[in-house]
Length: 441
Image (cartoon, rainbow, N blue to C red; front, side, top):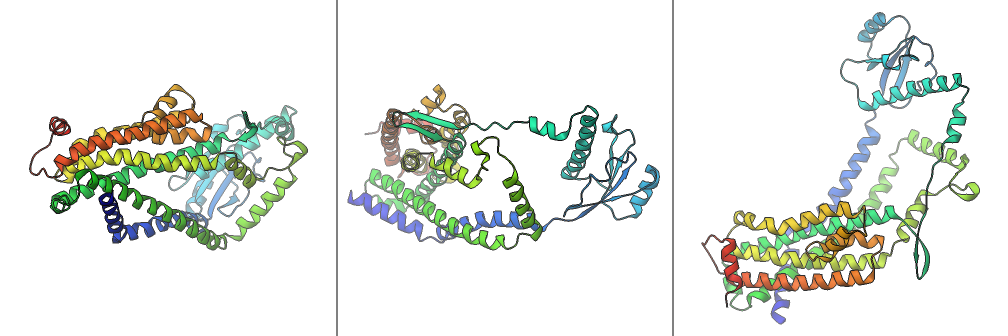
């Protein structure tokens, strides 16, 4: 046990003190926050005003096209030929031609431009024309737009879980998001840190350092120490990423909030006033829903302590199970190029489990969800998808026990390969050769 602890300590300190670890720990949150900060900055600062000329032969749309921060409309007179000539001389971005018979022939609208217009501009022009034509046709039929809007109903149901403890509000949306995020984090961590174990073993084997280490430590102790040491490095990096990302996000939000254009602030205030004046058909007493309170309520409806506890267990369990196999591959080969032939059988279950997760989200209690959350090779990802929706305690317990047994089995199997392969040089290893190593005494 003391030797395993010494290997864990060495692996942890060596990797944590590396410049690459420090750089990625700091660079990860900076890249994440910086990416969204740049996107937001570009979004609020790259609005170029476009001038749109409108030739409206029908005379129905003069008051319908409203100027905005991005679009300026100007109406011109004359026929289409003269409009084209004036458009070429002007510095306008587009010419919208609305014929006189647009009500009977809506598809006769034309948009002229020196080059292709954007989909947003095309869509905005079409929406204005469509709305006006609809209003005219409704008025001719004796139906006002208000009557049509009043007839529309927005149904928003509330999901409630019934259990022995009583009724409890639940949220399928929050369960889907939380489950998907947890599954993705486990999926990425298995690949990233499992590969680190494999490459670390391959590097030590290639440089012959392992020959010195193996004289003082048993192969199994060395392999287990490396696996646990890298796992602790991964947890350390995850915790630092969360803390740094939270701090940077708060600071960036405070800075960017002062850069929002005045028009955007005024628009937001107007929208809030409109929302306060609008009756809500879904809530008794016409109370306005609070989006923030709705999100917090959705998150609070989940069993957060259970989710966090299970995430920690399945994160470690999935990593330990697969990293043992990655370690065996690293010991069996002499360089990274030779690892490719053995990587496919290991990575396929991880990839399949991530694909199956998309179907499990649709039916968390189906037979596919049950069996894939029990099998150790897929349970770390699939069970984390299911837990936010509610899973019976006996299924979670069975899944955890099988995952522990699976880790013990893969560790034993990897140790049998590791003890032979770690000192094997210059030989092209095959699957048949690996099978022989397992049964060597």
